[in-house]
Amino acid sequence: MNCPYCLSEVSEDAYVCKTCSRDLYLFKPLMAKVADLEQQIAQIPNTQAYQLRIEELELLLDEQQRKQVRRSVGNWVSDILLYLIVPLILLLLAHWLIAVVYDTKMLYLRIISMVLPLPFAYALFKGHAHKLLPWFVGVVVLAIASVIGMSWITSLVDHSPVWPQNLFEWKEVLEYSASIAFSFLTGMLLGGVAYASKQRRRKAALLQTLSAGSASLQNIHGLMKSLQEYGGTVVALGTTAVSIYTGLKGIIGS
Image 1 (cartoon, rainbow, N blue to C red):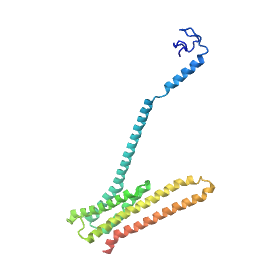
Image 2: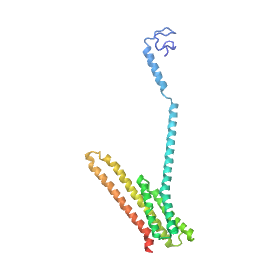
Image 3: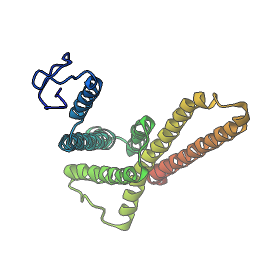
């Protein structure tokens, strides 16, 4: 610290300034307080340090957001490959085995086409929540690509046209595509019901901790959830019936 008279530096233990020989006894507490305040001020970061810290945090936030986007894109790609491309390949493989290799009844292919997409969609929607519209578009693409791919495989063997040639053939293609699409939609609905039921069971423990006065509200909430699940199951059964009807209509009718 410095002498208050001549401003020369003095030791903290000194009571007399060695330069001006003034008594420092009365000023010692004040000088110690000033020295402590100066030290605290020196420890406060300046504006530039704050700005650097803000920029550092912004960089970390941007990096985290980029990682989140990459993770989201990666999840989308993996889901499309696993739940759309794999069923498409399996459907084309089944068509090749039934229609080309073994040349057996097409009824078997129709049944496989109605059954195979369902477990894939169920596994997809049972794991966690998904947006319905993008996957509905994906289902339509899957169904059309499956039927056109089967027609292309057939054309390689008997040199028939890939695309339908008349209104009746277009109707067959649309009905077959609809049966595949409704099978996937049934799996989506059943998986969504299973996911909602799982979430409801997880919340049940928290709801049980509510007071007795809110028991009626809890019962109403549980009833509404149950009605939603039953409604989803009914719709899923409806889409299953439509899938069976559209898939077997042409075979049974002929």
